[in-house]
Image 1 (cartoon, rainbow, N blue to C red):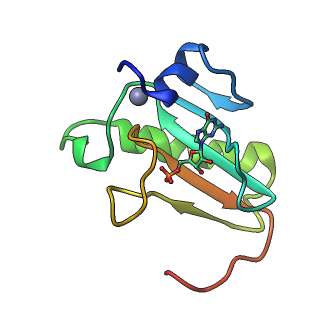
Image 2 (image 1 turned 90 degrees about the vertical axis):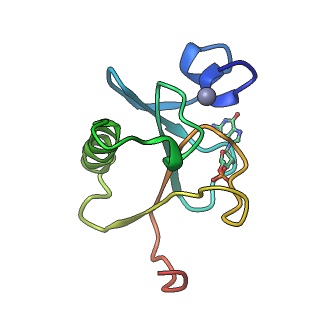
Length: 113
Ligand code: 5GP
Ligand code: ZN
């Protein structure tokens, strides 16, 4: 997808601090971290957001299996973490390439679910 910053991160055109990579999924550190650990997990293929995911597409299981691996690899599986997805305008989605925030490394507030 042209002019998509996360597609450019996948292609290497824009640098990122990679945390995890497999055939379908890439994870890298958020540029503006909201917690001691703030990782973005994205499909390598462009989806605008979850509204593009089809019934028999296995991308969501791949993303959550990647999250499982990242939690263990980075060592925050025991303490716990939060996964956040912003979809569309009211949620404040600013990058229109589907992504899941992993927030970890501190006690998180109980607000918003
Ligand atoms: P959203 O608000 O769309 O859910 O989250 C977009 C996230 O992408 C933000 O947390 C922002 O800091 C992060 N971000 C935006 N541009 C870049 C970039 O070029 N590199 C990295 N690593 N993160 C980015
Ligand atoms: Zn993209």
